Image (cartoon, rainbow, N blue to C red; front, side):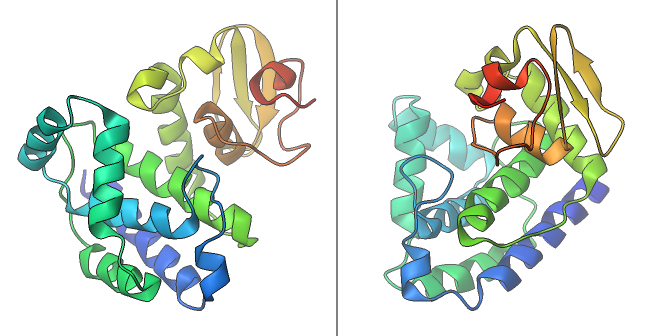
Length: 207
């Protein structure tokens, strides 16, 4: 458990460093997360880091158990007028170990997927710990889309990572890095050629 939190904290630190020099226009660029710009994703990460189990349950009840509503409310609460203040707020919570009542591995999913939601549109490259990315991918593959996973997207597919030991699922093969597979499983677009194999088309719409 401590090892997983150490990875989360390291990834938060790296993202803070990557966002320090953004200009005003970059903060308003669309992220990979539909409907959210770069600033919104960061505000969500601030909200996520602050979330406690009890607080999450009470907010879910208030939102009528609508994940979209609770996320929108969290972004509105944590998005400052000045994006640099939101970034400073994120820095202030980067070492927290609070979480919604969900498996700890979801914290890995958050920092990896949302990290790429931000970095890819900005053209920022980052090297993630591949073993932990595979752990996040394994979780997404068995978790329903309704709960933020990708189980239904992966039906009839066999995912094979090219950069670590990961070979799971039954059906048409999809080859790619663990990160590319994680993004596609999470409903995010990937670059042309990142995923290959007879199942790539059905997962990403590209060959």
